[in-house]
Length: 381
Image 1: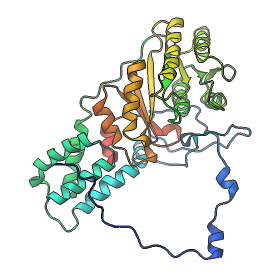
Image 2 (image 1 turned 120 degrees about the horizontal axis):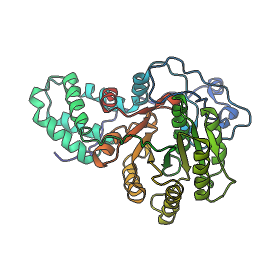
Image 3 (image 1 turned 45 degrees about the vertical axis):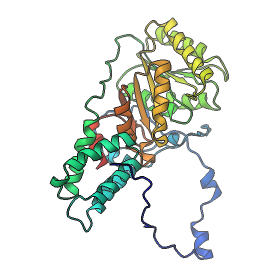
Image 4 (image 1 turned 60 degrees about the vertical axis):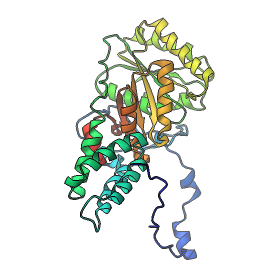
């Protein structure tokens, strides 16, 4: 079956609404103060990423003098109740709306799976960023089973089975090295949420009773050191920092020095965002990696790549180049709650031989979850 993403969509847009009256427009117009206000990261001390279901998600008040953050992933989340699966399902709501709602609509007025229905389903999978190759493979398998599909419920069941099969060969994350301190170097391009992810992981480790140290080796981005300092303080972690524009490798070296002398369990090394297409910038981050190994043989024990789900298939090219340069050992995929392209998870796992360790489905600490394929697929539908 050939792809049909050039197929003309039906016009389903609702009729235009009448413009609001002057008084009504004034009532709904937001104030400039509300638009300009940016809050600092929410309190994340003693929280856990992979914890038992929690009901309490109370947000701490903003601290005076906190620096303005620039990434959407750094903003505080709205209060959400429920357990970990409820958070996962809520975070994937945009992707689920494309897949589930449209699967139900495909059967309106139809009793069998015909060619038109298959073409529409194919379009939905591509829209969810499954990727052309995976979409075509799934569609070929569904086409062979079409005579046994009696309704939307059965079609969803088969879709779940086929999607879950792509996670069967997913490599298992290597167990943490026994080395102390355990050093994790966090990398990625600008704006993917590296600093925020470090803060959440540090909170998780602190919540498990471990002594954590954060190394502020992103010395170039404006307010980066102040931002990671807030996260480290609220996570109950130590911080090693230098002045702005200091040599990142020197900061990393001093960070390992401090971790060894203080008996730290886990070290997270924050790095400046690197455009994966810029060779000179990638060489700089390689220098940090070599410096860590020089001070502590075997370090870094993990190279965690942060990817932004909203970038879709571009995340694949980022992962390949970072992996070639640094030997990525794990991936954290952030901002799944902000996109309808949750299918990128399937594409990443099937295309790369790198474990997907974490997914971010919200802005709270509990919304950074250890990746579980079965729970993920269940939440999609």
